[in-house]
Amino acid sequence: MALEDTTARLASGPNFAVLTTMMPDGTAQSHVMWVDTDGDNILVNTDPLRQKARNVERDPRVTVTVLDRQDPYRFSEVRGTVIDRIDGDRARDHIDELSRKYHGHDYTNPTPNGRVILVIRPDRELVR
Image (cartoon, rainbow, N blue to C red):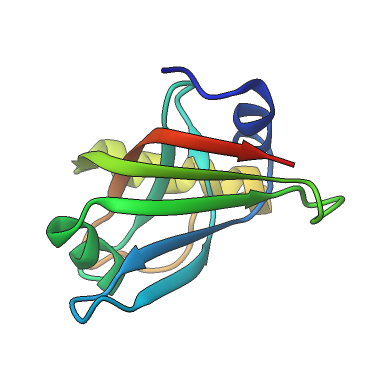
């Protein structure tokens, strides 16, 4: 299932997203994230040792809300499932791509643990 046009447009632009995952005790954990898309899925990039990465290993269900940078009342909520994890050089290149999109230059933070792309298949979308 391809993303709705509005969702794809928001995820392609320099708009921030909120990723919500489930903690081991069942409580929700939310993080403001950079976001991307491959046209069919939502992509987020993180350190593989972060809690959100560990959470989706146990429970791949997530919600990603992408907010329009110019009008935060315009957003797309994607309820979905993490269907893949991409690591290695591709994930490291991707964080540079995201940093250029949001800041205009390569990612400058150290990445001693590497990076991982979480590929999120949309199961339901709500566009406002």
